Image 1: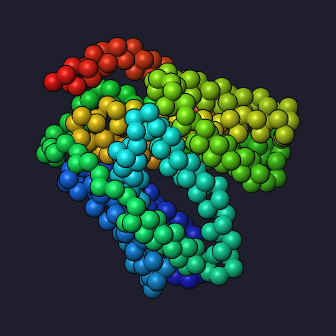
Image 2: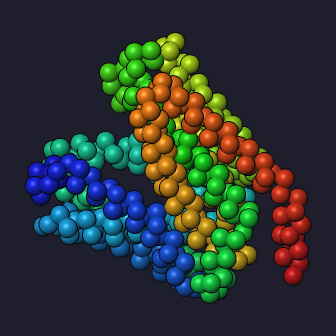
Image 3: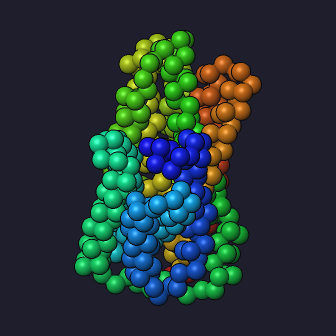
Length: 368
C-alpha cells in the first residue's frame, strides 16, 4: 500500500522498518543516557508524546522522505519509552512485585505482536495504511493521558555524568546479561525469520501457510510473558534465566524432529519456544535493574538490552540466510539456533557462580 502511495519499490518501502528499528535499537540508549536523573517522569511522558506525534505525522506525511524521518523519530520514542517505562514500573512497585510489573509490560508487547499486527493490517486493508498509524497514535494518546493523571512522582535516580554512565560497559555482570540476551535473540528471533522454509520443506510437513504457527508462537509469547512474573518474584533470577535458556534450546532442537513426525505435533515446541523466548526478558530486565540500581543507570541498562535484542535478531537473520546460501539441509537452521541457545545457557553459568560475590557487594553497599 505504501509502495502505491509513494511510487516506490517494495524494497525501498521496507526501509521504513529499517529506519524504525535502527533508531529504536541504537538511538534510544543515547537519549536515555542523556536524560537527567531528576527528570525520569518527564522523560517518560516526553518519549511517549514524541511517539504519538511521530505516528500522527507519519499518517499525514506527503512524501516518502518525510515518512522515513518520522518513522525513525517514532523508533527513538518507542525505545526510550520502553526502557524508561520498565524502570518506572520497577520504581513504583514493591521489590517483591517488581517481576510481575515488568511481566505486564512484556506481556503487552507480546500481545501487540499477536493481536496488534493482524488488527493493524485488517484496518489498513479496509481504510488505508494511514488508519493503522492513527490507531497507534490514539492508543498512545490514551496511555499518555493515563500516565499524566495517575503516574506518581518517580524517585530521582542517582545523578551521574555521561562518562560514569558509560562505565556500565565495563561492568562484567551487566555485559554477561546483555550477551545472554544477544545469544537468545540470535537463536529465537533468528529462527523465527526462517520458520516458513523449515515447515514448507516436504520432509517437515510441507505446510502451505505458516500463519497458524506464527499465531501459536505469539500466543505462547503472551502466556509466557504473563506467567513468568510471579516466578521472577519467587525464584532467583539467574537460576530462572539458566532454566529458560535450556528450555529454549530443547524446543529449538525439537522443531525438525517433531515437524518430521506431524504438522500438529510441531506446534508443541513452537508454543514452548514462543513462551520462553518472550518470558526471558522479564528476569533479564529485572536483573539489570538490580545490578545498576545503586548507580542510577538501570534505564540505560534496559535500553542496551533492547539494543542487544535487535542486534541479535539481525545477526540471526543474516546467519540463517548464509546457511541457506550454502544449501545446507533446512534442519541445520533449528539445530544451529538450538546450539546458540546452549551457548547462552553455558554463559549464564558465569552469572550463577557470580551470585555469592554479588550478594556480598550489595550488602556492603547497603551498609555504606
